Amino acid sequence: MSEVPVLEVDNVSLSFSGRRILDGVSFEIHRGEFTGLIGSNGVGKTTLLRIVLGLQRPGAGEIRVLGLPLSRHSRSLGYVPQKVVLDPDVPLRARDLVALGLDAHRYGFGRRTKQQRELVDKILCDVDAEHFANSRVGSLSGGEQQRVLIAHALVSQPKLLLLDEPLANLDPKSVQEIVALLHRVSSDHDVAILLSAHEMNALLPVMDRIVYLTEGRAASGTTEEVVRSDVLSKLYGHHVDVLKLHGRVLVVAEPGAEAGDIPDHPTLTVS
Amino acid sequence: MHILFEPGFFSSSPVRTAVVMGAVTAIVSAIVGVFTVVRSQSFAGHALTDVATTGGSGAFFYGLSPLVGFIGAGVIGAGAMDLIGVQRARSRDLATGIVLGAATGLAALFLFLDTTKSATTGATQQILFGSIFTINPRVIPIAIFLSGVTLLLVGVIYRPLLLNSLNADLASARGIGVRTVGLLFMFALAVSVALSSIAIGSILSTALLIGPAAAALRVTRTIGAAMVVACILGVATTWLGILLSYDSYYWVSSGQGLPVSFFIVSIALLLYLVSGLPVIRRVVETGKLGTVA
Ligand SMILES: Nc1ncnc2c1ncn2[C@@H]1O[C@H](COP(=O)(O)OP(=O)(O)OP(=O)(O)O)[C@@H](O)[C@H]1O
Ligand SMILES: [Mg+2]
Image 1: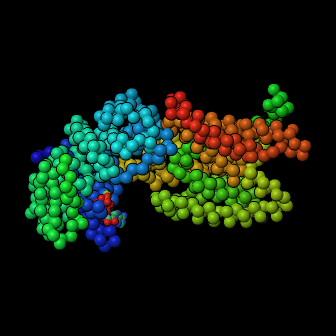
Image 2: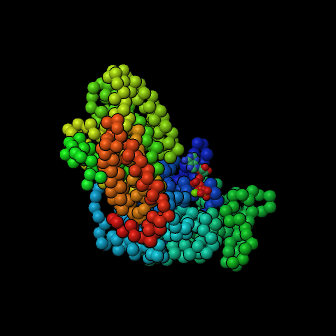
């Protein structure tokens, strides 16, 4: 591919008080790609996304967005943080939060143009949020808020959308809806997506690439390239089996090995 | 007419000064108050009033204008709170408490010195509970100027401040200097509190800051609408308070009116309680007030 990657993460390392969180993590994301950042709790997914955003300085390594070193004010990135608590007592409509995605960084006065208001309406439709666009955003359900936050991140027309565990706390039906929505939005808006999750199965149908994070190291590639027994065994440092069953993936540690660091705890639910 | 407005209400120059000063104060308090409530900074607002008390009583002792003391101390206090408190809500709370404690101690000293110096309790009364009827009319242009600057500041930082108040992560991802915006707002808060300290006294100014804003936030659907409603409620509260206080001169035989601050705070509290009534909430939910922009 000759085009510059939307995101290059180049040999990024970070330690917190002597503890190595990320250890030489490298991967690339290309235009319009859907990438899953998969890893168990505490493995450093949020930290890595914050480094990509420029909110956290890496100890070593480099981030490039569209081929350029990251400047803190890059408008080419949209972000949906992991835990967003929106106060139900604040009178703010869903559409107001989306509109802030357009111009919240601007100081000074100025009304939003007709064009901008139409863009907000269009994005709200794109994420199927038009019927609660005028409701208080703090009193919407978790799934509804997630849509509004995606719209907020999307409205500035970024080239890359970073979503930190957007599927946590959603029931299976909402998970499917949001995944399908993100997939659709990604191609409609020509925006690449980097989405963190501790469970990859819901993402298998839409993921172009996977970044599999464990113990600070990352393996990246297509799911066929990464979700394989030999690759993951090398990453974990002990043998793991990858089972494919009914279109789902189970990563299973050999008996006796520490299974706690495996993000996809094998489940026997058949969907 | 005389049932509502006692003789001389409109021709009295202290009343005219009070009406103007009351309106200016109420408007600034309402606008700044909406953000104070949204940012859960009522405690910081209240702490700044105590800091302002220190400045006011200190200025009185050294023979300076209380306004200078109120504002100077407020701005220094706001800076100090920002220095001590990092971005987290918890340490912000702690920083507020520390500054509040220090300021109150100093205020106690100055108020003591003021009383011994002037051999009356007038100074204490004036600083703590305000003196809207005895304001020097020359203060009015200064107050209007400061209000204008404060409203301009809030207007300029409106959008970054709003997103920052909703969620700091979202704001910093948009490249907003969370720290800078927070500090600028603290300055606006300090000036607003100083103005209302003069009008209704430093210990009661929180009521004017929070009351109308909190009531307005309950009955509106956008921040802009909340600001408009808060201004209307605030000005109405202050004017009604002034009127009742003036009238109360004729109610009691002692020959002294009851304090304006008492009426303003009571009305503000009443408004807040009424705004929580189920009837009002239903009106809001069906969208009748939501279109006020
Ligand atoms: N500011 C910090 N100071 C010290 N340690 C930190 C800091 N931020 C994160 N950590 C540590 O870094 C590790 C990775 O944290 P991070 O939040 O990135 O994990 P995560 O993969 O997002 O986890 P989860 O799935 O639970 O969200 C954790 O062990 C955490 O305790
Ligand atoms: Mg996380």
